[in-house]
Image 1 (cartoon, one colour):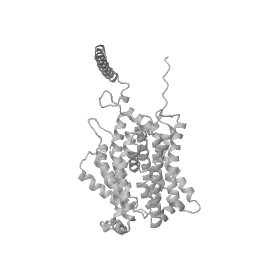
Image 2 (cartoon, one colour):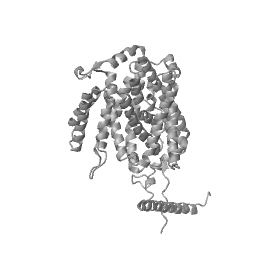
Image 3 (tube, helix red, strand yellow):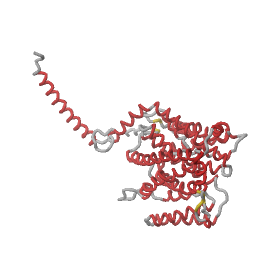
Image 4 (cartoon, one colour):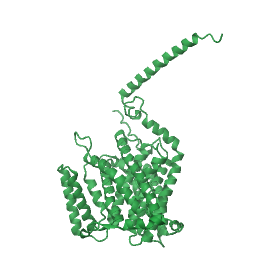
Length: 466
């Protein structure tokens, strides 16, 4: 009996398959553009809120109320941005999560272990850091603020400092953020729901059931789903459950697998349409009306002296890096997996540090946790901004130390000598590829022989100077 071939050891952060790399590249391209807009919106908010001549107008616009009061939706502009526009962001997050569960890395339990454990550790350790910082003197209600990673902001930083980062590390960051978003959604749903209006909640569930039924029946048309989504969102808001949960629920209902003859699944089509709206409008507008905190020497000093703000800042900078790096190392250690030979552990630490950029969801949780205390809310927002900036600077230093290696890996991933549109690294097991390459090299060899003969003929006829 022939000996069975041993199963090869699984690699942590190994090279992606070609379809997965293509999907990741497309998703990251949109998120990166959105991240740049997010950064611009945050800077605009800070300027608008801190220039004395403009400060009052920022407050006036943020506090301006509109909407049907009879439906309980007469909200401020800032409130609409946080509860309304972010529902679009979480709708896209729901589609991303569904895709990862049915078609991406999370569909394979063995492959899902790494991002799930890394994300859990990357949320548990910041929460622990915050709690330890506040035991005995501060408020513990803000434990969840430093637990979230802002993928758009992180990718905007990568667009500037890490253009050659290998696709495996980028995909790790993206998948990690998807799982991170899932747990952030659960935190919001469980810990930031006060009183429940069961009639409104029942209406929201009935609307979601209708949404699911229409999808299963194959009904198409935005004019059907958009009004229904707005009704579900309004009912969820009035139920006492955070309204963004409605967006996640509807995103998870979309089919993200392709039927025979389909070029794209319904989830992929909708995500392609809605993601630019989320990244280019919803999230930047939320940032514009959430990041406008008054910055002064005293306010920045409190970030490092007040237990709540110090806990948030340390949670993002230290907790995220230690948690994600530790979770990844533990996964490799106890599943007998090994790190890809193209990477070293400092690469994982650099990406883990980058995950300390917690902006959108951290700001949202900060507002929910310290609702009713405007001074502390602004202090926590300043801590989120400060911690995110420090995490970005730390990641920049760590990534730049390995930039030459990343550039070599990037060049290898994209090399396409046979010009067939598929990187050569993905065709090493294809005999046709090697035959094409042999033909290319034979043509090159023939051309060099001809040039050698021409050069030799010229040399034979050269008698030197007279």
